[in-house]
Length: 194
Image (cartoon, rainbow, N blue to C red; front, side):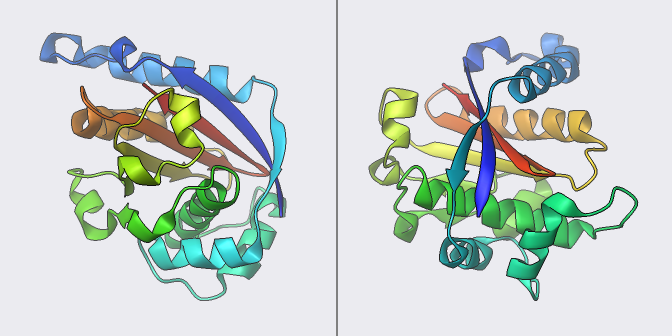
């Protein structure tokens, strides 16, 4: 499956890390999201096998992941996709992207699963020795925390971005790398946070 991939690298220092600056999170998250999806995408490819493997590491079990993935970019805007399906499709595609494009060793990746629902952990944890080609992207070797957000319609992406960056910064700052994946109709945006 071919995917348009948007990428943006930012410094984690741009986000507030004190209570007095907390109100800036939404504005900064919106600016990052706008910048990400106005960047020139590159086309990458992920395999069906990697998508299925990604669905095993996803937070929920959903029947027919490949069918939902193939329909996801082409769904009419008025068609309703459940949050479970959207989240599993987003997680499966992101994990497949990590495996096929960045050569991340998935054998040591730890999914957040139930811990993420209390806002205490990210969707994925990638240990430093499993970064693959992401080591070059981040220009170093540290643990990586990954947040994944998706939307079939694009609605609510600014709010999702704010929540994703808040969770990511609470977990990764100051000693680890972070990545937020935004999956929308027909493309994926990755924000690398150093």
